[in-house]
Image (spheres, helix red, strand yellow):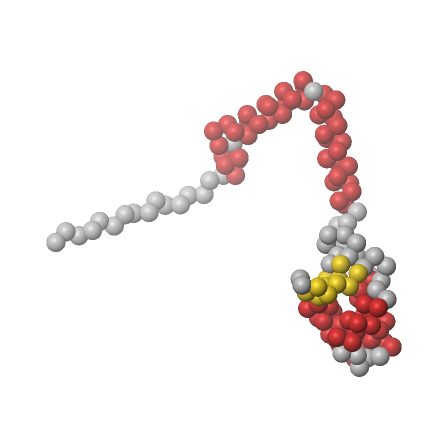
Amino acid sequence: MSRMSKKKTPKQTSIPLGALLDRDGELARHLKAEHRFAENNPKLYGALLDMMSDGAAHGRKFITGRKSGTVSPIRKAIQKALKANPTLKNAQLWMQIGKAPPKGYTFQDNRIGKYIEGQSAGSNMGYDRFCNVAAEERKALKE
């Protein structure tokens, strides 16, 4: 019977980051190509840099996120309805807010399910999330 030879795994060595970035001169080639582009198209290159810096400046405005204490219009409506009547069940709360929804929101109940459609793509809320927000607000009212 022959013994199966065990393959030795090579030792892992740490590779300097510079070597990874400059593998086969890739980074150097990229920088040379960018430099050539800048020389041949100075106006376009300047415009691209301006666009990138404008985007970075615009993004800096949103680093902190929402101001503390601000909530979505749906959460505000839930808070208002629960302050008026804290014993409302989720279905009753859904119907009450759905009769007079916040501006820009529509309550939907169709073959897709129950959801609130907002003004923009990311501002929709499903019924499950609505129930969770209502539970959070009930808890906040008790405290």
